[in-house]
Image 1 (cartoon, chains in turn brown, red):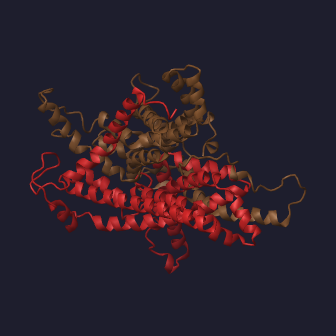
Image 2 (cartoon, one colour):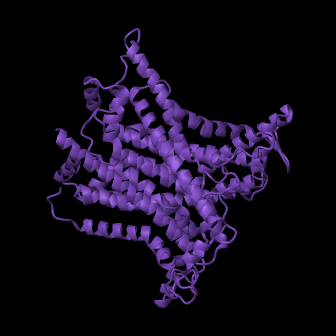
Image 3 (cartoon, helix red, strand yellow):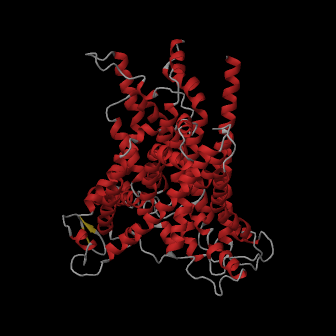
Length: 318
Length: 296
């Protein structure tokens, strides 16, 4: 799918388009139209049943009441009040705000790390590796872990970061530290580390894809015009790689914002995150409260990505 | 550019790349080694002898957790998700080439499904099925029909969990199909049509063989993403968990290298699937090239 030898082929999407200007569609075109609906129907159905309706139900249930045993259809904004309880009265930050701040902190740190690492790796593979076969091989090396289990990849940090882990042992062996560092595992550090470990691939793939389409003669022109390597990178490559950067950023931001698994496993189930609040409420069967939290999370995430999506047209990028 | 000598930047970047690969694979290799820990060994180095002791214990079962049942469920679900993802995404890709009313909306929904936080999707599907259960219970009480009584829950592996997985795999499948069709020359289809092939014949003998390697890629995404999926499944599965869910639970309860043995096993299975898919893709490409030569 990353074979980017786009041999200047006009987007095949437009080719069999119906002649829209004619007054009446011919029978053949009409049949094509009907066939298109039929072919798109299964996907539309799946998204309707398992995505749109559930989102709608979440919104509706967020206004329902509940007690210990059941949820009761009604209309109340109490769930939303509960989420922001104490947020406006006291000077101290309330639980919700603190949770969002913590999650946002993970988000920003992860985004910054994955962007720098992802861009550098993609840049190396796209511009410094010369044979196409080698490019594809290295690209695969970067993506293969994405297809293996995330939980296992989290667990695999335990022997490295634990109290008697490899990192502490090595540092003590070298005499750099006297006692093992405690906060390596089950801490903010290990959470961000795992996020970067798991999510950098979401930066590499779109950025590499954008870079692979950059016309090499532009780089050559910059070189001929006397630009240094940095100038070429900053003034030619980065602007042209922006769509990839935006797509990768959207992925990373939304994955981290809604996460509860990584924060749970790598934080030793001790660190709060927005996703975890929802999960806990869900298992306590406080469904309307969980739904209200989900609606707020969705709103926050949407606000964050609206800015990023404005910059690009995703469909042009494929 | 390619005729110029390597710049110092190349070596710096190459070193960075190597470090990144070490970062990516190092931890997994560590647990691969540690899963062969001796019977007295613990969760960290040093190795206390080398044995397959922990694989043996794993084979015997992990106490109360039905790990083999969970693995089997995950495998079956993965295969079903794979098949549906390839089929649905392929036909949707075909539909998008023809233009239809609502294509913009469908595309937006697909992308939204990818980027809406998994916990929100999972919660929504969980809610939907709970409300469905309530509705069925209500109908059972109202009508008194025997076949409606005590239906348990509609939530399950092939209902809610399957749907949750599809909301995650289908967008990937669709995006890949877009990329594939953008590079597909419609002249092949037109040639087939000119030679009198019907629509299904064109698909069967022209489009599918040409796109074969890419469809294998979609299948790879479908299976592996489903096999490892956790966040979306979490609230949308009935009583019987999939393997990633069990694994997540085990992270807090298992304190022996058994869990590494399990990690080695599942990673090995994933790698086997990836290798099979890549091999199949390469084989199809080769065969296509060969047949193309013979025909041409």
